[in-house]
Structures are given as structure tokens and as C-alpha cells.
Length: 619
Image (cartoon, rainbow, N blue to C red; front, side):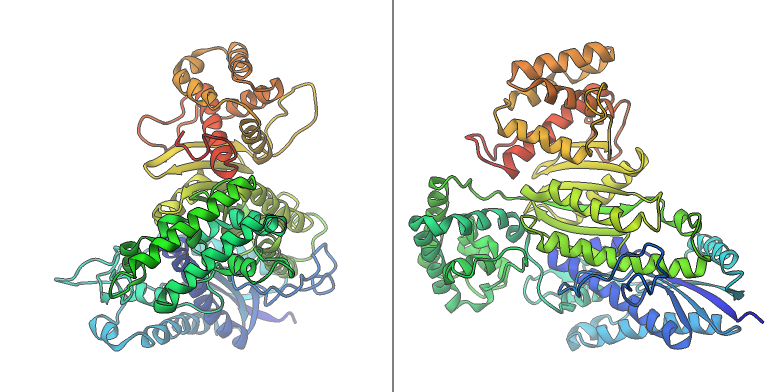
């Protein structure tokens, strides 16, 4: 007689919104790790009471996956950014499903209560309750066997969809208290002792949930490429070595009196060669904000680090001069000044839910195949994190990587390369098991001072738009300090610029070619000309529009093949109205697509590779 089980499906809803309610990159990372710990509490109960199907315990080798194309397990990762999915699927003894699901939800609440109990007593006394968080949704399909697992899986999906449409809203009343500055869902339960922000209990837990190594600040990420170039050039440039030594001394003089100002860069991929000396090792490891002269402003340092008084103004002036000396020494060595822009990359598998219900021909039974896919996703997450954090030149850090979805930060200079690398890593591992599955990607360039909630919302909205435009999709957007400047949404692989050839490159590579054309001499006036003529270009027939774009490209110093790329990529935005574009900036036709492509490419050339005299200017 076939062994019988109850199938339990439990999820933590609202995870992306919770993680995005953050002020700093460290908040984002802490939110991701916090959710992973809550998910692990559910999984621990399921593991003790039955058999966990999803997520996999660890990435197994091909033997564990049934030799069905699953990848070998990667080497153990030193990163703590590989997050568990927010869903647990388990098989438990028949008749126990409801109780196990209830116990899984209780385990989440118990784990959360333990986090709250570690907060200072003053915060707990003010408001220890967090209605609505954490929330657990679960469904149970009774009496499933391995033979009927596919039907039980489908029933669980239908039931969870229905449960998702039935939302409960616990009562919550708080009078006479300010709203939490991270999340407007709760009232403040007290000020953050360092920053002075009014935070709810949920936000206090997120702030306190810092384990493992730290997470780099936006300026550490933005300056990573600059610091790496200095380290590489310093071996033959005594002036650079002297400038770095001067900056280090100014930093140590200041932080010896104010230890709270010390910080680290936390970028595994940024390191000094063994023979580079202690000054270069310091530059690789220190908080990257110190290479910007503006960081040394006394009042800002006191405010940002919660100091009781501003640090010594003369010590700060010495640091400011040292950072400026390093900038000049770097320019003399051919290294552009550090940019204040960086990028966030969001990636998500396409139609993953549909694929999980439809194994390809030749796959084993659905239950065994789900185990193989789950192990593959764990392996993909680890390899994605390892790629973005340790592959030469990428200099990024992952906020979370669940296998089928990922969020990470990189310097502006490496964002397009990282986006392509991450997409290739995922598809290479996924397609042996999921031949039809692809991944869509969004890249958002933003100023280090931009509110991260806006940045993350923009990235997820752009990713949704890219998916709606056709999967796999690619989107890129530029957030200037005054708001969104431009965005493009393209298929991951558009038609070749020359219709007579079979050569096709991902849109991310073609966008990089356009940016390189700017860096190689294409005039920035091309973007302004296209922007000025946006409406007129949109009214032209396709053939004449293509000719006009080629004429403008030639007039501004661009090669004909780049003009073809611009025309073909621009054509993919025909008739597209973007929900998230600023008022009056929605793309209405092909001409708009070419215009915003030129604007995004010019931004990349100016900020990611600021090697011209107009580098860093607002376009």
C-alpha cells in the first residue's frame, strides 16, 4: 500500500515590502536575514514532523538529484546573503497536517517574540505588540501519496490563491505617538538611540538584527571601482601611495577620538595584493565614504553617527584636504574622480510557478523532480552570490538570493556586466531541469543619497514592467537626485541591428556598446537632440525614423553600426506607456525609446566611466 501524507504549504506574505522598508543598505540586508530566520523556524518544524520538499536543505550533487541534470554542489559560500525562500512545502503523516501547519505558524511567532524580547526594556514597554507581523498563510491537502502528489500540488496552489484573496486585518490603535519612519504601518515605540529616528517595534528589531559580517554603505559601493583602480595603480605611482597614506593618517587621527566613526567596506571582491602594503589594505577595507571630501563635514558626521558633539573641525579639514589630494593624485594617474552613483540589480525567474507544475518530458515523478529543482535553486543562489561578490571587477554585494529571485548592489561601472553574468549563471543551472525557464532583469542607477525605499520600489516596478513587455525582459533606469531621468524596457535578446545577420546580443550588452560609444567620442548632444525631437521622431514612418537616427548619430560622431543598434533597441519601446515614468515623460512611440536609450547610455558613460571633461554632469 502506498504511503500516505498530508501536503502542507506555508508562506510568509509581504516579504518584499517588509525588506524594502529600509533606510540603509544594512537595513535591507537585516530584513532579508530576518525573513530567512523566520522561514527557517517553519522549516524546522516541518523537518521534525515529516519530510520537507521545498526548500532543499542544501544543494546536493547530481547523485542526490537523480542524475537528471542537477548541478554539482558549489563550494561552501562565506556569504550570509543566500536567503531561504519565504515558502515551505512539506509532507507530514496523514491526519496531522492541520496541527503541523498551526505549529509552523506558532514557531514563526515564537521566533519573532524572541527577537522582540532582546530589545531594550524601554522599547518593549512602550509597544511590544506588532499586529499583522509576522503573518503566516498555510493550506493543507490531506491524504496525498507519491502517485497523487501532482494533484495535491495543484490543489494546494488553488487553495493558496484563494487564501491570498482572503486577508485579515488585526485591530491596531495607537494615540499620541508619531508614525514609524521606516514603515507607516505602525506607531513609533521609541527613538533609535544612534540616529534619533522614530521607529516601531518591528523597525527596532530590524535595526537590531545584525549578524555575520556587515553590509557596505551606498558610498562604499559607489567608490569601490575608484578604490580598486587606485590600489592597482599605486605600485608604480609613489604620489598615489603618499596620498593614500595621508588619508589613512587623517582617518586614524579623527577616529581615535571618535571610535563610532570607524567602519568597514565589507566588499569581498575588493582587496589589495599581498605586496601592496598596509595603506592599500586599509583603503580596500575601510568604509568607502572617506574618499569623498564632503564626508568630512563635522556637522554631518555628528548627525549621521549620533555623536554628542561635532568632531574637531581642524581634524576634519585635514581629512577633507587629504581626500582631495588623493583625488588629484588619482586624476594625474588617469583615474577619474569617484562617482556618487551606484546600481541595484533585481532579477526574477519567469513563469516559475507554472514551470513547477509542468515538468519537462523525461523528468521523474513530480515529487522527486521538485526535490531536484529545489536543490538546483539553492545551488543557483550560492553561485549568483559568489559571482557578484567575488568575480573580478564586479565588486557587488547581494541583499538576498533565493535561487529564482535576487537583489544586489554593485558600483555603477560593473552593473551591466553583473546583470549579464547573473542571468547567465541562473539560466545555465536552471535550463537542464527547466528548459523553458528564463530570468528577467532590472538595473536601476541611483545617487548614493537617494532614499532606498524609492530605489527598491523602482527596481521592482521596472522588473514587473520588463516582464509585462515580454519574458525574458530587461529594464534600465536612471534616478537622479531630482527624480527619474530616463528608463528603457527591452526584450533580453532583441533582433540583431543588421537584419541580414544572425548575430544577437543581450540588450544589456548592446546598451553597454552605446555607453562605450559615448566614452569613445560620441557627443552627449546626441541625447539632447533626440530628446528635443522626441515627438517629431515618433511621428515618422519607421524607415525615415531609422534614417534620421543614423543621420543624427553620424553628425554627433557615432559609427553607423551604433546607429543601427540605437534604432533597433528604440523600436522595442513602440507604443509603450510606462506606469512609473514621471508625468509627461511616458514613452509614446519609437522615437521616445531611442531618446531614453541615448539618455541612459550617456549617463552610464558619464558616471560609470567618468573619463571625459564633462564626467558627472547631469544630462
